[in-house]
Amino acid sequence: MRNVLAFLLLGLLISSCVVDSHRMKEWNKIPFKERMKIVENLDTRSNLFKDDENTLYVGTWGSRKLSGKDGFGEYKIQNVATKFCKEKFNRNIAVRIEKIVMTKEQTEKYKLFNQVYIKYICEKSDAQLIAEQKEDIKKQKLSLSKNTKIRRFTCSFSAIPSEKSKILIDGPKAYETTAIGIDIIYSNVNLSDKGAFTLQGASNDPGRAWFIGSKSFLLLDTQMLPYDCY
Image 1 (tube, rainbow, N blue to C red):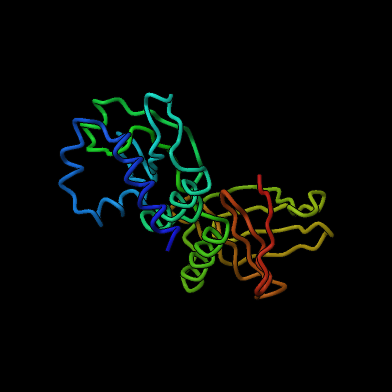
Image 2 (spheres, rainbow, N blue to C red; image 1 turned 90 degrees about the vertical axis):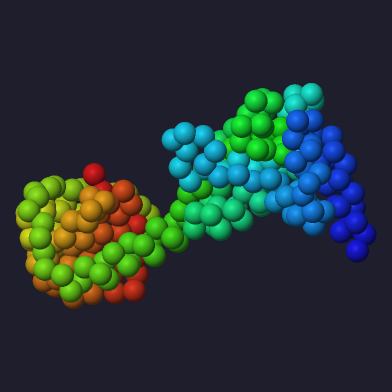
């Protein structure tokens, strides 16, 4: 109970000090519980500026007069950023970019209640990317190959970089020579809208498949082994 009261008192003190005078009238119109919610969520805003994408601005309740000194600690601010990355953009990682001290004109234009914000870019975690790739492969399993491109890749196992597979993609088929010299033919090659290749129908093992994109994986039944393909 003491922690809750301390937080409320801190919120009232901070907000009364750093809400710009031209915004104070609007601030005072907000019901008390809603104001405390704004304080708790650090007046977080999303995609404020032109060309922003998956971007958050998390208020610090810091003061412009104190050269942007934060009212709340970095741990609290980071936790709020992570929370809103998940809620707003379904992305699990909040990457801190920079601290921005807003001008009075900006606080008026964007209806802000803070003077100082931390800018974050929200990114997908590795687990999210892998889940998406699994889903892409699942969707393509029943589809016929429509790939017409020809590509060559050298794929290096992330855990043992010297272990390399050579892959030739030739339209609807692909040919792999593994690190130990085994030749494998893939009968179904698909190219996604995002430019990623999936190789399925391995001649030696139906559970073997490749996903080659910005992040690449060799799939062996339920295993996903990370590779760097170039």
